[in-house]
Image (tube, rainbow, N blue to C red):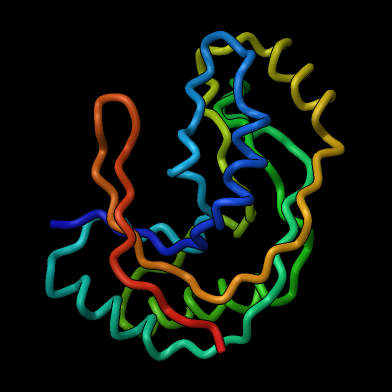
Length: 178
């Protein structure tokens, strides 16, 4: 079994900019810069033969490159507790189109539809143990964050192994946008 997800791998320049935001909140578990990505579709645990089918379905996707612009920061809550600190994404038709094509391709091969609405973001930290007032203050002081646009020319199928500290993400296949 292999744990898979489809994402945009962020270029080094963007990862460096995001890493400058990280830190200063006790109890937050900051994502290491090498793990920054924008998830397009979480797949989960699949058998090896199923992973081959996923690869085949993703290989057939045709989309044009597009500019991605990260902007603003925010939080996700669950049961009234702040779980995640993230950087947002400027509205982008190219990104929405790509994500929709990925979802359609995976459903056509028999995968269950994604239940959650697509909310493009890059996770900065897991925050279930951080003081809520510190997180709110962080969001208020960084909500004007904006990175220059970066052209996305491919998307990636990643495997993920859960580790003690942080998961290990391995790019398995890159799919060109043309």
